[in-house]
Length: 312
Image 1 (cartoon, rainbow, N blue to C red):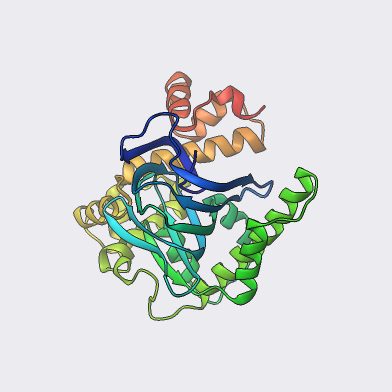
Image 2: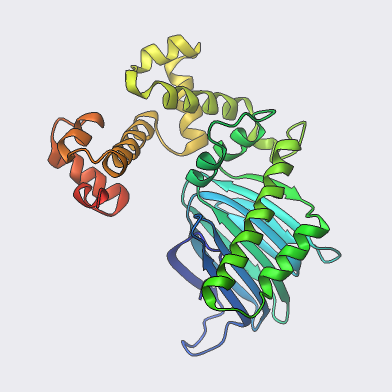
């Protein structure tokens, strides 16, 4: 049973109450659709059978939620978030740049009607590539871990969510296509909301000086990875001290600059393996590994498959 949304890792645990393995935790309808576009849609119309406290790990991505009915108290790592409003249908948008522990509490007898759409980071980058936006709001949002925005869905978006919960009778592939098309339209509206917001309405506490410096460092690394700049060079070109760079980056992304660079090189190595069909040795060289065996070990640890399988 997956109550977390479509982009969850395998780990899932009911913390309380302790239930028999055959006991019913939640009654109702669950529908998970993995779309060809890369989106994943989790739609539920349920009633809680117990006062439940559960936890799971959610993978990185942008999540768009419409809560048509009901209310949940959620914690993303140590940050509290409420989903839903007793008086109106509401929406939330949040972004995770790393795997995050999620805790959720609900009450017996509570009805929940919700649609949660999970968007992998690469989907947004591919969709918006080479398109100019009026501001950096979306870039800042998807670059910030635990960025959260409140969203008031339009009547049109609410109608789309209701249709996802109750799709028309059709063969499963056609039904899934219908769900996907409606989910994309909901995501379009949600992204438009982020772009249009002003004065840092979204997760204003994310836009601290530390966060701004971390985002500046992150963009610098992405744009200058081929140069492989030293920390000293980075500090000089960014106008920061090495210590402040390390502190800002680690505090915002829970990763050192060196770890992020290593991960970025591995991602690029996977891209050339899949898109250019280069040899494993060549991919290792481009990733900065002198030893292909060390590269293969790091690659498998990061992606769960051997480099030789990435190009298949």
